[in-house]
Length: 95
Image (tube, rainbow, N blue to C red; front, top):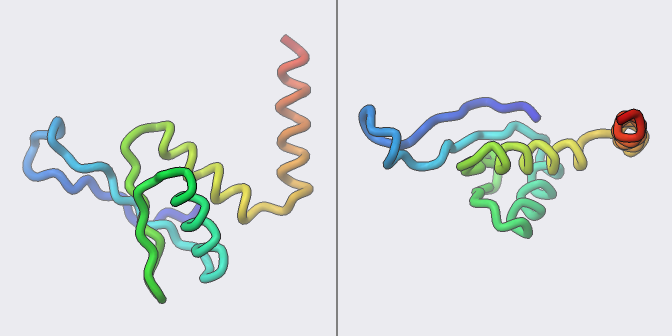
């Protein structure tokens, strides 16, 4: 994931009332729309316009992980994802 910008939209120093971080994700046109559709299916707040970057609201670390996961699953070669999954299974069996 290529993050261009992350910004808290709250006013002043009061972070308790801050809006979620708006993260701009830089992706090619086709990938951007595929990621946008998948994030919408997962009920993530996001915006994507014609010739505009994908902007995602990230509230929690789980939201950040979800966005990362969707981008990885869309941009990485399937062989790379399968290798990663295999390494995870091997680490789990070592415990």
